[in-house]
Image (cartoon, rainbow, N blue to C red; front, side, top):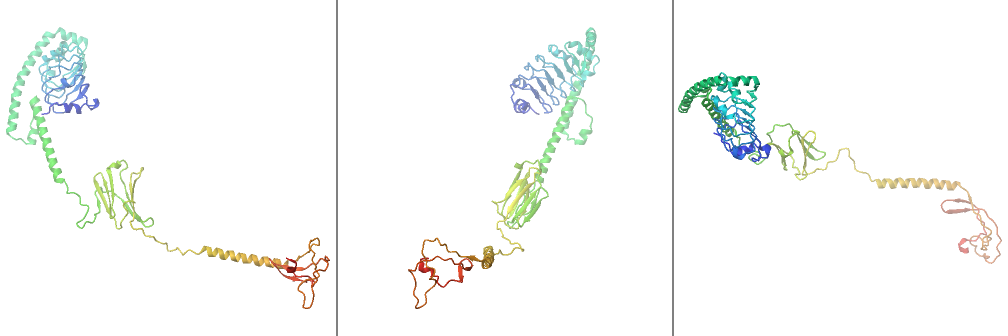
Length: 449
């Protein structure tokens, strides 16, 4: 048995931020509720109430809901219309597929002046002769009955023949009530016998059932029992199916290769970059918070939604330098793990570097020698003349040139007579030899040069 509790109503009031005092609409359908209670005290502003598909046998505890406009009580065990007299704003009442046989109880809705729609289809009273005319005459404010509009002419005829229709309705009602008492007693006896004798599911569902509140109640209890058994068996199966915790290491402590997620992966060793590369095709729309990556020197482990993917590594890697990235386009996870011991390798085509400085100096010296040789040849072939200016301020006796021979005296005080001499000289960077030097030319050292 399910009771209407505050927590139940708050869960159904999420659209109103779980506030009960200002709640205007609540849905409590298919909750196996057997009694209406507390709603009129907690939800006084309620306008719409859904209570269909439950086991409610009586309409009660709704008189304080002054703003209530619509009540849906379809598919319950209600046998009489009552408890709605003080719902002043009631506009629509749905009692489809219940057990209302006392049609005279419809007169209790006479004071609900705003009532426009009433649904009684699927009830025993709907089978009575003159049922529609009786309801139309009893409720003059009603506009629609069982989804069909009540015409003015139809209501006038019903009111004119009301006494005759009423007598018929009362006779049929009394006959139904007598039969209903018999069915109630038989139903109670069947419930007691079912408790004593255990009936199998096949026998229960193959046995024909009557359309009574007791039969519906019995069916509902049977369904509850089966659901409990299924849930119990399911829990047992889950306990049996519970696997031992996954082993990630063997007895010697070495990591194992595991792929619980059963995903394809790409793993390679890059000799040039000195690292391992691992690519996992993770779902594009999977949240990154559901991924967990752990890189250790000898293995890498990735957890995808609780499922482990572990791969052993033949070489140790540097955990601190490892990088994990996720593609924004495909969603795949890429892990780069550099080796802990980097090895420097030389390519087979590589040679020792040559001494470029020595080569450059050798080239420079060779070029310099060639230039010097070319310059010396040009200078040898070139003829230059030496001219002595006669306007020089110094008096130089050019008659005395070279060193005097033994026994020969120098003429230092002889008067100067300017003469011009031309000498054919072969020059290089420095003048080395003089051709046709006069004998009377004095040495340069003697004149202060």
